[in-house]
Image (cartoon, rainbow, N blue to C red; front, top):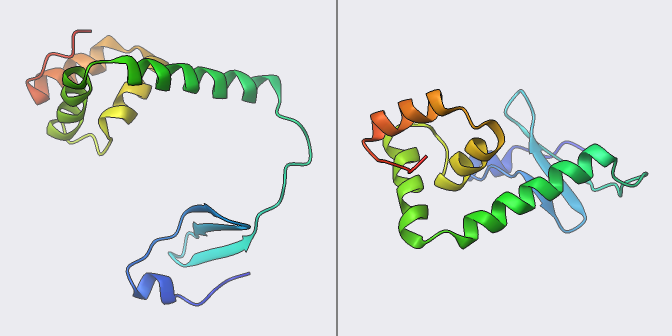
Amino acid sequence: MHNPAIFTVMGFNPTGDLGDLTFYTAANHKPVIFLKAPPTAPPTARQRFIRDRMAYHAAWWAEQTEATRDAWRRAAKAAHTRMTGYNLWQWWMWHGDRKIMGTIQRQANIDLGI
């Protein structure tokens, strides 16, 4: 069901699940709300793999020192990546592209130790 654009008028950009409702913003920039549907099948092996790997990376992030996490946050911001430090960490864990990370470290003038 489409809702009135009252949310966007108020500056609220709903995205995700809230209780039994799912919110997202359509291509025409209008919010869409509908009842959340439960999954009809168990997760596939690929979905389990991705979720487990993301959880592993999240746990590894949490084990880093505050100084290390802060360096990643500052690098993401200083390099204008439009990512958080955690998002940059996840990206690095997934891709491992030293060339791109070297560019980010040079732009940010921060050594991430990779």
